[in-house]
Amino acid sequence: MTDLVLPQIDAYAADHSLPETPTRRALREETERTMEFARMLVGPLEGAFLHQMARLVQATRVLEIGMFTGYSALCFAEAVPDQGRVITCEVDEESAAVARRFFAQSPHGGKIEIRMGPALETMAGLTGPFDLIFVDADKLNYVNYYRRAMELLSPRGVMLIDNVLWNGDVLRDPPPDERTAAIQALNQIVTADARVSAVLATIRDGIWIITPRPSA
Ligand SMILES: C[S@@+](CC[C@H](N)C(=O)[O-])C[C@H]1O[C@@H](n2cnc3c(N)ncnc32)[C@H](O)[C@@H]1O
Image (cartoon, rainbow, N blue to C red; front, side, top):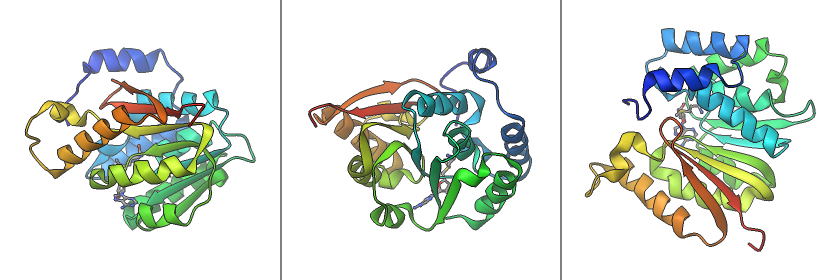
């Protein structure tokens, strides 16, 4: 992934936003040192944004699709109250092992519940409402995640969907591959969905901020 936002602008914005907690910093640094696809982790600026969104909606129940080594799950756990819960879905055991170690070191780690297995299956067995749903896993399922997440989202909640600019490839016609086509399809569906009010924010790789319309 190249940078859609100039790295020095991203760093300036991060420096002027909520600081990264020591546990999150240690987790990010270890992920960058040891994991092949460390760039999947949202990083300090988008992490601060996720944390702030959870605070804005006063989230007590958060659902995350795509945990990786647990950075964004920690951003949410640090924002929800003591009785709050962050349910996070993952398929990769190696990533989950790193996450578990860092959750154990955080005073907020006890709020996080890891659900191993394909996220669509996990979502099928969950009961809403969730105050915040963050979608950040396999792109080919983005439309399926969106549809199920709409059923699980609180009428006063917010859904966030990551990487929806896909490094700028959403502009390409025809799409260069299946993943790009899947993200383009999602973006069209969200744009046309009368049930929601949505903004595609140009933070990092693009993130949908979606809320149900009051009448929906
Ligand atoms: C982009 S990373 C998540 C990054 C994480 N949100 C963060 O910022 O730290 C996507 C993760 O989704 C996981 N994943 C892929 N397909 C999945 C599926 N069907 N169900 C659950 N997790 C899946 C991958 O193993 C990967 O760790």
